Length: 414
Ligand code: HEM
Image (cartoon, rainbow, N blue to C red; front, side, top):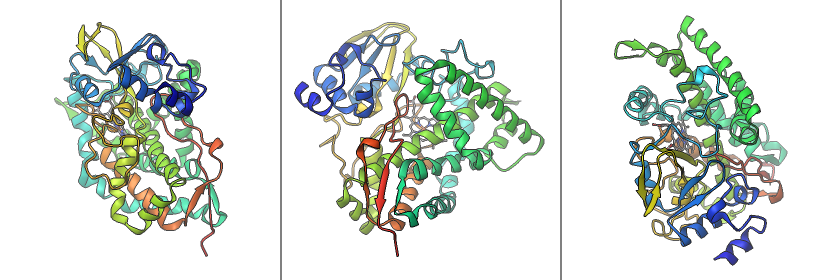
């Protein structure tokens, strides 16, 4: 196994069983051989990096942890200190002291915040966004179709979810570039550089506080207004909760789906047979989207133990951090046949790309629709497209992994 791993990534240190560094460039580029290797050697690895963290690699063990929020709290959402907010917050703006509900909340608060948001993200209201998403996708394609080339991540994948969540939340979609810049600085540069992350969080909070004020004066038909007007136990949400929720929706709604649309296009730019099949057999798009989610799961978060516990025979101490390695669970060969392979015909696909348990992704209906529509419109309007330079492709590190550059070329449609 080590040989296979070494052949796939030559530049990653070999001591990942005890020293896995989530920021190691070899791991970021291709984490899967490392997860495979860990899974073969033990059910839970322990890394001494950062403040130390456990790494479950099997789907069943990840589920066991996710289903036990009383012991595994979401207040410690990251094993790398400080990229997202939550409890690890000496340099956090005081406005985010309440964390980012509901993702950093535990029950009973979690239930209250989740209930507030559920109506906007239920299947029926989300289905109404389909025509708008198609228009957004087509407007983007209009800008590069006649060129015969584009960067499918920079010019397409990242703009679809940015525009949609801006409109849903009630902030100007024209500020989209500002939001993606914030995401780079919070989730990527910020992982290496806490000062940049802290300054960016202050910028985001200032911006959102201003928008919330504007909505208080002039209510609109959007999520921000819904949050302002909704009462919980006869009381309106306080400013810290409002800010935390809006901050989360902006981050969770953009980076994740941008990564998944990008991963799908990156795969298809190299697998021309599947590209052609998806053009000719549109019913395959739904299973294909699930495969892209499973095989390139973008989100990896964490938990912190509130008491001593045992998982997979490993003694976990109060205060220990655990990586919720959803991407590893989704390649578990005990759970999926040919787990490393994209199979767009796969019918049964109970993956954990959206997590599992009480924190399972609230935006999954929206994310699936955005992926389906973005990929459908791209395949409809752009003829056979190919990756031009694999060396330019760069994957983001941190809580959300996705391709940030995808240079492609195609024939200019006549
Ligand atoms: C392909 C795209 C997406 C993926 C892979 C994804 C993945 C995830 C995962 C794994 C979790 C669980 C985190 C945990 O267990 O700690 C989560 C939670 C969440 N996601 Fe997503 N997400 C996506 C898109 C979205 C979108 C579009 C939104 C909406 C704006 C969204 C909003 C949320 C929220 C609010 C939570 C917290 C739910 C809770 O704590 O109850 N996500 N997501």
